[in-house]
Amino acid sequence: MANPTAAMVVIGDEILSGRTRDANMHHLAGELTKIGISLEEVRVIPDDHTRISETVKTLSAAFDTVFTSGGIGPTHDDITADAVGAAFGASVDIREDARALLAAHYARTGLELNEARLRMARIPDGATLIDNPVSVAPGFKIGNVHVMAGVPSVFNAMVASVLPTLTGGAPLLSKTLRVMRGEGDIAGPLSEMVEAYPDLSFGSYPFQKDGVYGSNIVARGSDVAQLDMAIAALAEKLGVDPT
Amino acid sequence: MANPTAAMVVIGDEILSGRTRDANMHHLAGELTKIGISLEEVRVIPDDHTRISETVKTLSAAFDTVFTSGGIGPTHDDITADAVGAAFGASVDIREDARALLAAHYARTGLELNEARLRMARIPDGATLIDNPVSVAPGFKIGNVHVMAGVPSVFNAMVASVLPTLTGGAPLLSKTLRVMRGEGDIAGPLSEMVEAYPDLSFGSYPFQKDGVYGSNIVARGSDVAQLDMAIAALAEKLGVDPT
Image 1 (cartoon, each protein chain N blue to C red):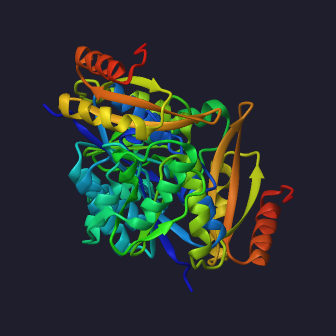
Image 2: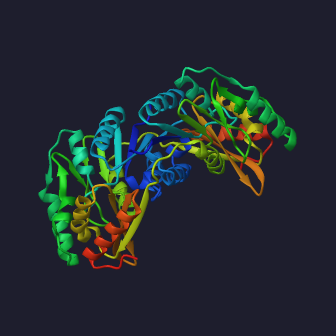
Image 3: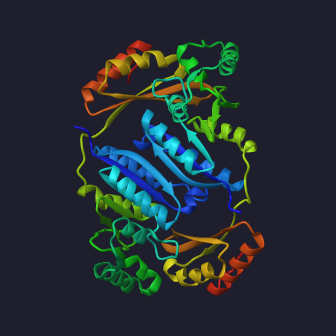
């Protein structure tokens, strides 16, 4: 049976302008792979209500689970909650459970729970909250969409909160064979492996080290015995040590 | 007048599985911003013929220029040329100009121009080549789509080859005000700036340093005098030093 699928929406002008380098996609990709959920698409889009809403709607219909990152803070450009609410036709307002979390947090830290900070308690109707052990202001889940923060430490903490609630599939395992030869020299033998092992997928990733070309050949699949066999066979074909 | 728009397609299972961290999006974003082209969307998709072809078709119709990264090497998973050709209804075959480049290169380096390496001379009909000063195998441009390599050093070199051929707009400038205060405290004054300067866009990016919350407030626009004025006004509102 095929593994569950997922998509991610990275929301933020600062990523598209090159000001900030996104780190959340790489983190989520690794975590999903570990539990056998196949990340099938990532879209990076601006802080724009319509774009967020339309993108979430499209991906929510096409994939089993969707994750968003960014735009749930207290400032004017934090519009993700409203846009995702709109995607589901849900009204968005300050919710008591979220307000209570923030009130307790700011009482502890001595900061004022002002109008701006109260924006972070705006949650679409029918959503469930996602725990934020780093800075309290929660994410939320509505339909199959998980709405999470953009700040990497907070995003990672929210992913950790969400992971146990997801149903994964067979974890995607991988084995890598490192060959100090250019891709052009290994492409032929590699194609034979692709034919011989239809249940596995193979990728080849070239690199340069001290001016010498090499390739990392990665076999992916859910059966570790088959992966070992394929890598051993390829190593023999190429006359290299598989370990 | 609005600046020209662009989109990017990052192609590669290795990015979506978390094996490799993409670096090309961040590089391209910064380069396009410098010349006044607005990167409006990035999609990361797998090595899948239909997905590549459909994504390129969609983005090519929606934006002025499209850039792809990945999938133009010599191995079986390098299917971008065929998929992009299909998106434009162009047949794809070994092209003499591309083959000549490869032949000269491999003659110089003493490596064999074998069948796998010849794949890198497969170019859609009607495309123009993109120069690759790093490893010779060219990218190409067809319609408004620039097809480039995934290896960052080669991608960056191809971007440098392409940039002089693009028509940019007014460069998007930005000024940053760093405030050692949480976003919740600056959101109010910041909103007043958003109202007062409709030609600028403002973003706020929180950070933590030694346990203290701070925010980088970024104003973006094409008029440097207006940016200076806005940042000075905001600094005064917040009682901080604008320099």
